Length: 414
View: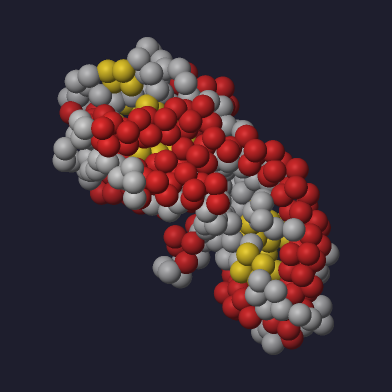
């Protein structure tokens, strides 16, 4: 077998498209102004940042609504640039909770509700708020990783009179399951709660219409969808009946509407804006070419004995294959695949260094053996048929090799 390199870890990060790089380059050399400066170079940089905001607003369907910082307001939705999805999630959750304190609420009167399968960049801020005395609840999920609407209803009913924020991701970063976000948002709003969604994995892969989904805050990131690393955004929208008020978690010169101080990363913002402009094209490619390749990869893998698919079979991202190979250790599998040039992961790249069992799979009720043998394969627009056939050939060979030395004797002959 002739070795080739097949990158199947696009949920961790993606290559930057040439057209994105080309749009960024001038803002690294000739158009290097600070957007806060009043001179011509500064105004040019500011115009580029504003143009990127508008492109992102269009890409996520968040053109209407408003925002209230408590001291000043705006008649339009806001795109607040951050260093990435982690910072945006922290701003949404901590910003909400501490804004409620500023408004005179006690910690007991503020509730944050998150699903149990959120990314760590949501769960860790929730844990921090818990340690600080806020009321934080975690929603269970079914075997597909989907939130049960009735569990949300129950938590909201028990918290009548509190200021509440519900945070449920649009698509899971590990198993790819897409949540029924609009249904969740309707329930939350019926009880007076605001809704935040981490859409970092969904952005650019499936259509996002924030107004139709009825979310108040949406987190997105550039590097998951062919843009530069180190840039994300919290998109904020509200109606007159649901004002979003946030306290900044980073203080300084008052940049980004007073919510995220620090000189804007203009080249990265410009690249993010270009990605947003390309979103319709990317979604089309994910919905056709990438999904077709994903289906072939999924079908081929599930032909391997003692293999199960994790996550919802249909309501999942078009590039995600998450499986468990019984009798195989996932980390051993990744290392063996890498020897053949196939690059994959067991789950979130942000959790890999912690060497912890997947909280997502645990919340879904998988057995330890199924969790230990899990593998995440995520395709991109750069993959082709040859990649998939090569990966399948390697997968069959490697799984067979690892099962021969597995302590689970019942799998050794497969």
